Image (cartoon, rainbow, N blue to C red; front, side, top):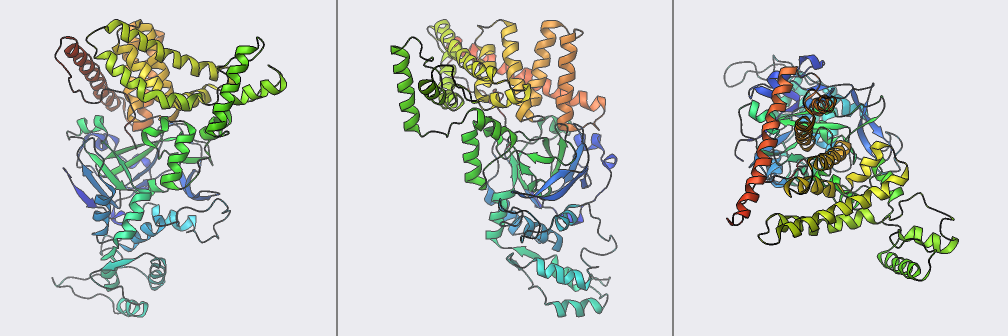
Length: 580
């Protein structure tokens, strides 16, 4: 990697039990600052059907700090390319780990941290939530002796028992319990330098190593990585952003939701988790495992999660979308036959339902008569999936239209009409369902690529009135806020939307002030409510310059094409989500 790859001993890091001990200014502006480990108003519990997970122990407000932690291991790479799992597994495998860290790996390995859907209690062979919480709570070792030197005989037995099932190797074999007990009872011994040596058991335990297979399994199932560190914080810290891949046990025990309620920021080796939305007492604390795939339809999301993590997602978003857009209710053959039948009926009967209705509604209308019976699902229940399948073609068409040298106006107008028509179809399907504003945006998020393309193309094509572009940008912002609140994409869009609104209505207008508050709220969801006004302004200023630079780069690219300069390669100027 460009910067570093190392192992952090979670059990030897500084810790605190108060969020006020976290110096936010130093955290976001100083490379040398090491934030203490912290666990906020959350606790590890056993969740039926999922295994271990985090729940709120009281009501939590947006921007509250949930946890600060260091990884068992982390590796960094070139910005834009996440390091491979093997590179992190090699770092973890070749490292000496403490007994506490070995137990953390055991907690994550295999099925230990997850349970079958039929599990209803902690007595099913999974580690107890109490033991997991003990491992993850802030811990300060005895500073007068090396780690593990104060281990009691009972703790030795517990460690030896917990290590069963995890393949461990090392320069020294693990001593038997009698040997360890005898060594401990002998008291202090002199080391080579003549000082006081640690308990011999501590020497053995701190030199334990994991086998490659265990490391790969844990990394594949529980690591977290992004293509870039937080770019705004990196600028304030005067360092170049790099990609990273790490194993943070606190984060690894957070379960998935397709619309998570937390935001994640990685600063060097420190991982910080804030509440991205209000969380009620007892509510589960969740993250997303999907990255940019969170903007896919329910069938795609569930398929990916089943393949990579072996579970069937039942989050609120998936349940609502599957009820309203049940794309897997019919086989592909049945859907095709129903659509043909509906089209034939529409052509021969003046009272027949419209041909654009979904196959389920068309079947009911054919059997019971038009309007006699309707489903709770959208009329065209396959619309979201079909739009996602056509996105590749639409994006390629946008690239061609924006870089065309002939028939420029005709191509751009035609494509804008297609994109706008697709957006209108989605709105027509969602509108009659009577959804809350949040649930409606969750449905739009399943075709998030369409709303992103509409916002970008309406700006770059030069065909839309500023108010039309602002409306498209606002729709895309609301979609991102619904499923990726506090993400890098959310902040980028919030800054861009604020600039467009204030340019159109003035900074002092009601609209301008509302956009300013919304932008500040987005940054608070990511960086925390403990950030002072000046620091928040600085972070927002960095993203404002980035947004301006991206827009200018896109326009310069189009000017180069228009002048006959040929293709100009521009870094990703789209507003796609980059988090994983």
